[in-house]
Image 1 (cartoon, helix red, strand yellow):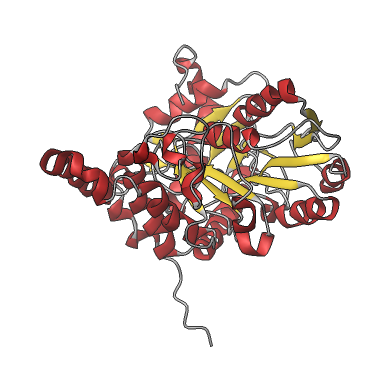
Image 2: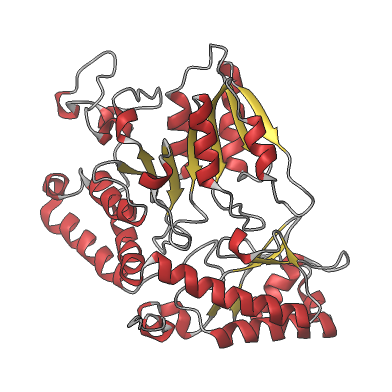
Amino acid sequence: MSTTLPHDPNLWRPRFPILRESVYLVNHSLGAMPEGVYGVLRNFADQWAERGVRAWGEGWWTAPLDVGTVVGRIMNAPPGSVVMHQNVSIVQSIVGSSLDFSGRRNKVVYTDQNFPTNMYVWEGFKRDGARIVTVASESNGVVPLERLLAAIDEETLIVPISHVCFRNSYLQDAKAICARAREVGAMVLLDTYQSLGTVPVDVEELGVDFVCGGSVKWLCGGPGAGYLYVRPDRLASFRPRITGWAGHVDPFAFELGEQRYAEDSMRLLHGSPAVVALLAAVPGYEAVLEVGVETIRDWSLRLNRSLCEDLGDRGFSIFGPASLAQRGGTLTVELREDEDGPAYVKALEQRGILVDHRPGAGIRVSPHYYTLAEELTRFAATMSELRETKAWREHLEQAAAY
């Protein structure tokens, strides 16, 4: 007989101030701020005010590795294998700058459902000889696995791929993708921005080469805290051209000339770290670890299954894969051609419900471990009301900035 207690979101809700006044269903975009962040920011300010320059030697300088170790626990990464950066754009650029595109193996393979910033980064490496192969998705945004695997061949250098796609929450088969890449000698850079904190990720089990993401969404860590995992056996040969003094083996020697990389994961750094953003991310990570990602995933699937049924009964369709097992934590609700997504978002916001919209997809809604089932019922009922009354039209000139 199992002794596991059912998940109770009410145990966690008091930790998140915004839940007191909003139905917060936009966790795929910006997770709710944990109350513990107030204390972290006060401590940072006190340390700066009272310790001044000495703070660098009292935790600030090592924050990229120290905080990386905490988020690394969520993906089962060995201590010291994750280092923090500002965002995924710089992380992807750092990885790309470490590669040699001059040989026959110079293909970069990804899908048309990758987040655009990643495409912008890799398109830029065409100047260095990279060949970009973009695998097309179906009309629902799903990329057939066989089609993607077939594109990964002996000329593929790297596969920078989204674990969960941002438009339709399609959960790609990372295990199969990593296995295919190993088979042909290619590397995988797995973007877990839309998965870590709501879908289990185990870098050891996957054998993945690189993992990146940020803390803004399901990790509830706020902006400015991106992460990069490099598989330990790849670290010694990792020599990015995007680098800086923080990545030097002896940064305070202020040597002139060519970079001499640090022997540990500090070699992945460039300039001075954004300490306050990194420290502010930790309460979110610790909460995810406390709840447990398996528990979060189970709760997410339960809520989304119920919401799918409710929306379906009200005449709404869901964009993306039909199976919830092939989804991350987000549902994307399709709108009719004559309906306006941003206007819906503003109408919902006026009614105390926070969601967002993405072109070519629909209204994105994402419950998390602190979401109540009745909040999703309220969302579905409000969507139905807005469609029936066309009240969303009152907000046509008020597009949301998120």
